[in-house]
Length: 267
Image 1 (cartoon, rainbow, N blue to C red):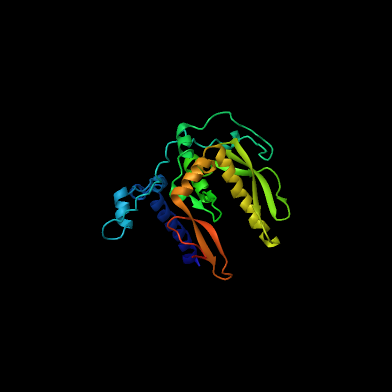
Image 2: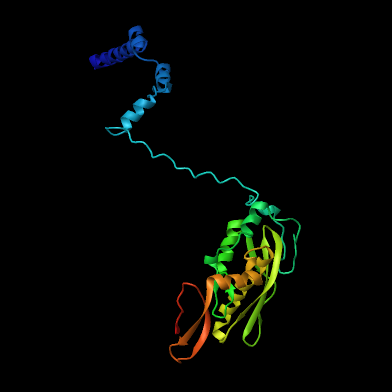
């Protein structure tokens, strides 16, 4: 019992001496890193790699591929007096063209526009009806207006509803160009069945376009009796034809160099 009671104080003293030695030893304190060193090392950022090294590490082996060059749209043509730039939407006035005469005779067309509109018609473009009337196809009028004023630089506006008679339908249209009232005319067309009425109403638009163009000099020679007689003499002829079914004979006008269409044939 005495030996066991003596050993307990000795063991306790040894433990205290061992702990004090490790906690206060100058060599151990100098060798062990301080908490501040751990904090400074953790806060210090890693050195950044150069851009070339980053590309080299991420790019595959071989020559570096480059993106195709970006294609840019060609610059828009500069506006001219014939084709001025469109006005901003906020500056376009709201006009009821079914009743308005806004801009009528306020200014003449620029010289280059007038030159396009009044260019003499080529005889090759003029057609001849069987009764001898000469005319310019409706698409030719549209091409002349597009060349002079530009696509969307002009338009036809109805001035009222279609008026249907027994076998005739009429409708009034106005020609508007560059935001101004230019001319108006009554278009008319014939129809012989109820199902043909929509096409006849559309034909009124073409007829009104032809009449409106007369006011601005487009194909105006087709309304000149002197020109009509000279054209018929030089470029048209009257021929005797026979109906292939009824065998009836009659005289028709045809353009020189063209054959007679079915159901007729030359006799």
